[in-house]
Structures are given as C-alpha cells and as structure tokens.
Amino acid sequence: MTGKSGNIILIGMIAGAALGVMGGLWLGDVFLATAFIGTIFLNALNMVVIPLVVASMIVGITSLGDISKLGRTSGKTILFYMTTTGMSVFVGLILVNIIHPGSGVELWQTEIPEMVKSSDKKGIIDVIIGLVPKNVFKAAAEGKILPLIVFSLLLGGVLSAIGEKARTVISFFEGFSLAMMKIVHLIIYIAPLGVMSLIGTIIAQNRDSVEQLVSGLGWYSFTVILGLSIHGLITLPLLLKYLGNRKPFPYFLNMGPALTTAFTTASSSATLPITIESVEVKNKVDSRAASFVLPLGATINMDGTALYEAVAAMFIAQIWGIELTFGQQVIIFLTATLASVGAAGIPHAGTVMMVMVLNAVGLPLEGIGLIFAIDWFLDRCRTTVNVWGDSVGAAVIAETKEFSNSGGGTILSRLFGKK
Ligand code: ASP
Image 1 (cartoon, protein in one colour):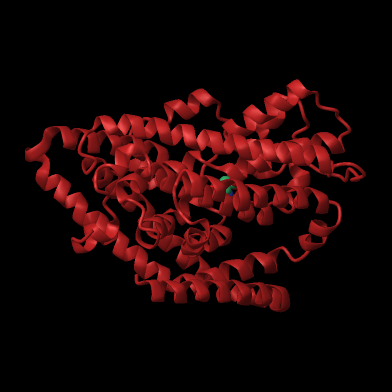
Image 2 (tube, rainbow, N blue to C red):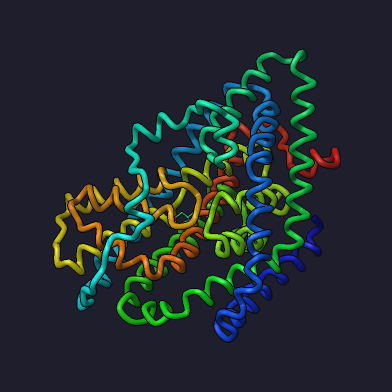
C-alpha cells in the first residue's frame, strides 16, 4: 500500500467513524440494518489473524540468523512491556487519588454482570499451563494467540537449527506470510465501511448510557480517559522518541488505521493484522522484530487495560466508602498489571479480569455491574492505547542491538527484494 492510498484509507476510516456516530445517534435502531457490514469486517480480520501471526512469526524467527538473539529479544520485550504497563497503572492510581471520582456518587441497585459470573476464573498457574497447547489446531480454531506464539517460536527455532534441509518449509512460510499480508491489504480497503457500521451500531444500541457517561459515571470516565491520554500522548511518545529513535507524530499518523480499528472493534487481537501492516509497511519497522513483538504485545501488553483496572477498582472502593491503605493500593498496582497480562485481546476481557483485582483487596464484585454500563465506550478507548503501546514496543525493540547491527529487513524488502 503506497503512502498516498494509505492516507486515503485513513481519511476514509475517519469519515466512516464520523458517519457512524451521526447515523447511530440520529437514525437509532434503523442504523442496525448496517450491522452485517461490521460483522463481515470483523470476520475478515479474525480470519486472517491466526495464519498471519503463525507464518510471520516463523519467518521472523528463521530470519534472525543467530537463534540466541531470540532469548535476548524476548527478555527485552517482556521487560519493556512490563515497565510501560507499570507506568500506566501508576498514572492511573495518582489520578484516581487526586480526582476521587467516587465521592458523591450514589450507589444504585446493581448486580454482577452475567458475563463476569459465567467466566471461568483463571489463576496465574492456569495461564502458564495454557501457554502449551494440547492441540495446536484447537488453539488456532479458538483464536488463542499465546499458545500459538509458543508453538511458532518452537517451530521457527528448530527450523533455523535444522538449516538447509528445512529450507523448503521456511520458503513455504515466507510465501505464505506475504500472501496473508496481501489479504490484509485487501481487507483494509473495506475498513472505512466496517468502521462506520461498527461504530454506528454500538452507538445506536447504547444511546441511553450516554446519559450515564455524563452523570454519575462522568468523573470516573474522565479519570480513565485523562489517564489514557497522559500515557498515550506523553509517556509512550517520549519512549518512542528516545528509545525508538522515531518521530512520534508521523509514527502515530501511520498507525491511524490500526488505532481506528482498535477503537471500532475493541479487540487488540482482531486489530493485529492491521497493526502488523501499519508497523511494518507504513512505519518500516524491521519485520523480524515486529513479527515477534506485536503478536506477543496484543496478548500480554495492555497498558490501557491495566490503567483502567486500577482506576475502576479504586472508584468502586470510593463509592462503597472503603478507604484503601497504601499497602492495598500496591496490591491493586500489582494485580491490575497481572490482570492485564492475563486478559485476552477481545472486547470486555479486562472487565471480566476485574474480578481478580477486586478479590485481591476484598472489594464487592457488584461494583463491576456499576461500571459495566459504559464499558462499551471505555473498552474502545483502552484498546486503542493497548495497540498504540504494542506498536511503540515494536519500534523500540527494533532499535536494540540484536536488530540494529544486522542490516534490518522491512516487509517491503521481503515483498520486493529491496532494502
Ligand atoms: N478489549 C481490550 C483489548 O482487546 C481488552 C480489555 O477488555 O481491556 O485490548
């Protein structure tokens, strides 16, 4: 996709979002007739995400050259992700203590949402066990990205070790990952319509809760959005500039389609194909780094979700009039960070993981019912920051010495054989 058509797509997506907002507000239920377009867009993204992730990770790993780089890269990636997540929770906790959004909010009748009640409560050990898939095809069919990352790492690693004899298999995955990328380009052409439909539908369905957004839950939403803005517009750009050696604004603009898709779908996983495209093709980040860092980020790095979990837990404590000590806030800091690692990249996953944070400090689970009314909106905002955080991570890791000394390799060089 050339720069020019990329710009047209971005303008199209923004126009689509604007039309969606107007359609949803003015036409209400009539707009729901367009919902099928959004479903097709979402299906198309989900269709391509698993084959794309598996193939591009295998290619990324086999083209690393020296396999010991993989260990160092993984360590640095996880360290960077955990640090940024910690920074974002910290910002959230400071804001919620200053703004105190829960004061004066009346406790209205509320109960634990069905989605939270019926979720299988997973501990950290279950998450670790789940990393190794019993059946890789079942994991793929269920869209579970983490176990597939583990499988692709193993496969890529042994293919590298086998060397010449594995050449055909490696070439197969090279061709396959390019083909998946081409499909992503095609999907991006229908993105403006998909965005319009998804935004309009969700607004039409939630017109009533717009009132709650500005009344009882107004200060709470304001705190979350302010925290997300500080992290997304100040902290991450500074890291991008100084650790990633990139100009933040152009990098951000190039991420436009991915960020708009994140906001529209509320799913980091569904957005992943477009995130990979925007990072590798538009921002020209070394594809060996990006193909590893981005899938991992879409599942374990959720800065926005972590911030939201911490603010939401504190807000619930404030409403119930429970004063949390410094020690308890440290527990919230840690559990919010862990909950965001464990949350899947799908809509509302972070809210379901709230159970872990609330239980850790003994807060009432009914609180989730209270904030659920506007989760459709805040979920979108935090998912956008989650995806932005992943893309900054890719640029920073691509600058580490594992990649910067070895000539780089953008997806364009793979596609057209030029550097
Ligand atoms: N929807 C978010 C994501 O996909 C996860 C969450 O619910 O916070 O990144």
